[in-house]
Length: 198
Figure 1 (cartoon, rainbow, N blue to C red):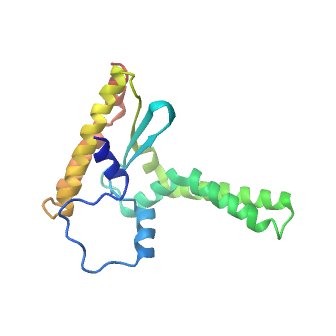
Figure 2: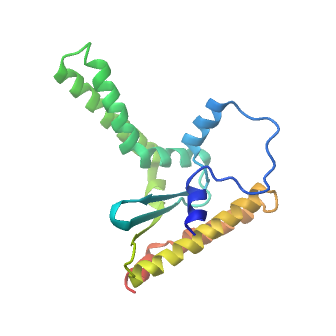
């Protein structure tokens, strides 16, 4: 399972997928990947930490959203990272032109304004995103965690399979979105609450 998750979390490419005849430029592919992500349905993030902690996070966007809505939601969710990086660059860059306090104040204002703008652009789609988080500790068997992990594994396998079929042209866009909708519904707050009560 970890291998399947790693593939989805990194530069996953379905097996047997024919290479495209016209490759876009490297900068265009990189920029598109940053804005659009690797999967239209969301993302899977895995982190391995000290002392045997493993953290999995499955993020699923609401089916039927437009590419621009998806980009805005991705930007909003990543704002703490890219916003802080921009803030730091602005502080350092304007430090030679402005006084330290003015550089700090103007950079902070830009950081907060960018967050407000991206939040507004994301609209209420940002509140419709569903997330399933699982934290496991090596050697520790927690029944609630095991149930959540089993659900996460099923959902990721389903999404990986339909992505592969779609890339190979063996699945229509509509059928792909139907499978995506099933995963989205499985992560509804009601079902997540029932998992937490187990």
